[in-house]
Image (cartoon, rainbow, N blue to C red; front, side, top):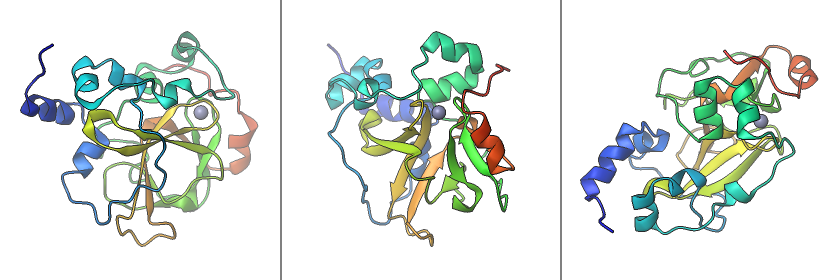
Length: 212
Ligand SMILES: [Zn+2]
């Protein structure tokens, strides 16, 4: 098997518009990752054979995890639009500074999972990070599940919806933000839906229905 050159891999990282690829251009202050689970390779990586070969491969923890909402890919395709499916179910990343909620700073309300409508973050968890994606210093307790993500030769902590396993983004710790946790949940706007009233979000936990 022939491996591509390192510059090829680097080019590919930036082409993918990966959230952390941008972030990693700046050195992180502190480099702690709060939860280190067994190092595994996520599902998306196994579809990139050369990366699997370079960085080791095993069955991804996130692929083995089960969640209360067990809808199949076909069922998700029926309720999510193409971009939602790419990000939530295929662990994609939206382009920075483009998301609906990047600069959204409400003083109340709740952000739910755009796939299953489970409440994930409250408005007062959100802070201005300047990173180009919505940033939260904490989540609603138990709403978000963490996995170690070793794709692209980096060790990051992926966050998914605890109810449906939908990909939200990544969490970073120790960057020096003046928040109570010094954690940054870097979340794709497309993975979220904002509800002005908390009750509205909790009322519909069966999916948000229509594909656009
Ligand atoms: Zn969900």
